[in-house]
Length: 302
Image: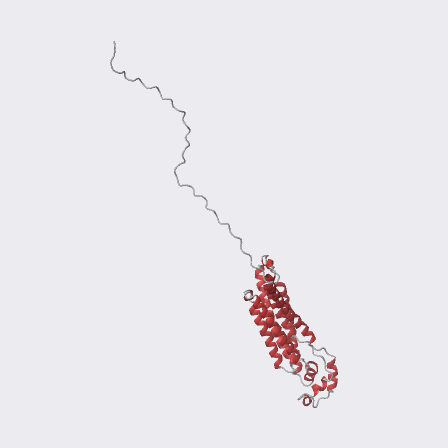
């Protein structure tokens, strides 16, 4: 029996499947991690330019001038000691009022003059007091100038005893000068105000003060100090405005002017009295300044 028409197609053969490829797991959805931004490398700080040779030379010159002033003041206290003149007794007896004071006195003035020649002639004390005050100025100048002359020393830890020890020495020396000046002032005033013997002994022993030489020395020292301060202030204007150095400089100049004024107003016979008074005032000023520096150093040590 024949069939007409096409037979329905049979089931298709199974399609051969290729082996499953491994599927990489997708990352979980979320904010993408921020890529690290490039950090800017810090540029090294430019070091300060070292001071020029002329700058260093000017600072060294100013410090040398200050040191020379201190040394000259110490030498002046020794070199300006009044020397005994050959005819001092004659000059004293010729002063007005001395002959009138000796009327009716049973004593030979020449014998007193011979005794007076053997006594110690006092040296001016005002130069020692000024040397103490100017020594403090030199200490302050060194503290400001050394970091500029040696920049490497500015990075080191400060030596806290660098100003304490010399300031303490100035404080002790100032006390000694004040005690000596006050004792001399009391002695001279007591002797001068004890006529006739005391006054005559004062005139023969302490009445030969070298007033003109002392004033000339003070004028020269003032000029040298002005030059040193001008150089230092011009070469280190910023540093000079710190640590109270300008106030100390002004005090030093004012002390020298006061000392010169005291001696200028006195005569040669009363010059030792004026010298002792000026020395006491200047030494007291040095004590106050050194005490301030010492107390500051002690606070920094603590």
